[in-house]
Image (cartoon, rainbow, N blue to C red; front, side):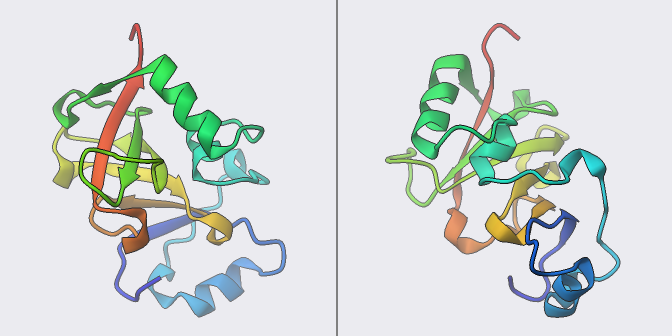
Length: 146
């Protein structure tokens, strides 16, 4: 993580490090640690967090979203919708990252997401402060029938 990221660590998922050790190694998180018992002990990856299901792999997560969600433009997004991030245009291949929309004013610049960054934990951030390896192209998905 690069110093200067505007993120909040909601809960870490690293049994070997304390919250204080994570903050010491990531000074940009200082004063941003939020402990929320809802997120305690959530294992797995970003797709597990976004779908609230620890039992599925990334291929199953992608298939589940395509079958049960529909793609929408950001101006129709709402809290709880899922974002998938790609490193190429038009979402070719599997997504690099999954997140849920925490709040939005229906434009990219005003959207806040929550997502799991591997063993680093669950973070809340805007769309412009994700690690570069998650890609810069995104899609928004909402449950079908909603």
